[in-house]
Image 1 (cartoon, helix red, strand yellow):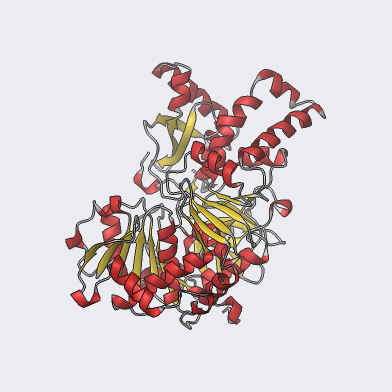
Image 2 (cartoon, one colour):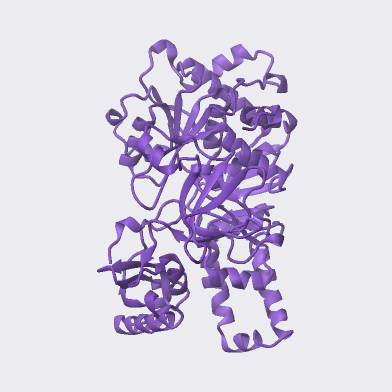
Length: 556
């Protein structure tokens, strides 16, 4: 347990607000709405008054649902520093899922985007005391007595009454609360079924924040473009919590992060580090780089020593400029990066690294800076914060990755059975991931325990590795490898219809190309991994907010 005063989650922000008072803290990207640390602290104080007025006590649950914006950040920080338990709900969840989470978590207040609230029946969330808009912090629904009203005007009056001489650094004084206490409940967006409420203690959030500061991921004046949903542990921990703990500036992207929007944001903000999921880099590689290096003159030059470095250098320069030109590294998390994409980026010496974590560890388990990164790994186990081991390893050393340490959850909310199943008898968290760990503590992931398939003679088949090969084939957008009749492998393939239309391919031509793709991939696979048939899928697979395919929805 992290017990030093400077390691306490609430004290981290109490100190940061005071230290960085006049610096810019958060901006709604694409608008003029920027708050300094002083203004952010003042807004946090107003929400504290709102909580008091509504009868919220430390330990009560406060839910927040909406796209990244300044009010989302303020609500999160206000809840944590008040001693309430924040319940972030991913904005991509369906209305029924959101209703379930609000009710299951026993949330008493809900801060939500107006557009999402329109799809929720208030009668289905009967225990909420009030609902407030993330658009403007106005009250949408109140079940409070008249004397407990939490409308904007009342809160402003209470604020002036409490701070008649204005709000100053000395007024930033928060509750004294142990890191052992529950800070948040994050409902997973898992790919294998119904979400569970991960109980994250303040200690787990503080551990990730401290690690970010110690390793230089965040520092005073750092700039982050937060385009990953803050309701997900990865973006929340580093683009938001760690950045603001250090005196950095977070630019919040509230729209769907298309390549056009992101490249514009990178060019304007010039971020100092970039957190991404594999899908972003893989799309850039497929759209911007692969067409260049596959052209005859370029592909020939890339085989010639010395000449290849000239071409690769130009590609590297173009790519670095596209990401703003001032970043230390791009950090990939949430899912494995395609091996071919990783190999090429490392060939051009692009500052790339891959971390590993999960919602249940808030999120980091392993990480290494780009200069020390090892190919195909996902970094080193975090020394001093986390431990990892391989359980039930096979002859190749592959087994389940199990972890323990500062970042681990306390369990699943109101789900003792799932909690018991997630921990070993000696207290290690079962990650559900299959992999190996080398002598230096680098983790190499092979796939998920639940997605691993068995070959005809009991061989282990990792569908994610096959999918990575398929996804590099012409006219393939994404794929999913499934097993039929316990022996045959079927590849569901969603074609890249933009490329198909651009080249005016007929259905027959597309099917012929996919059959050729199947043969090419099979030539690179073991006999027991052979794909028997490719089935075309007409639209993208349904995904979680961290862009993992919801595999449980599909059959061969």
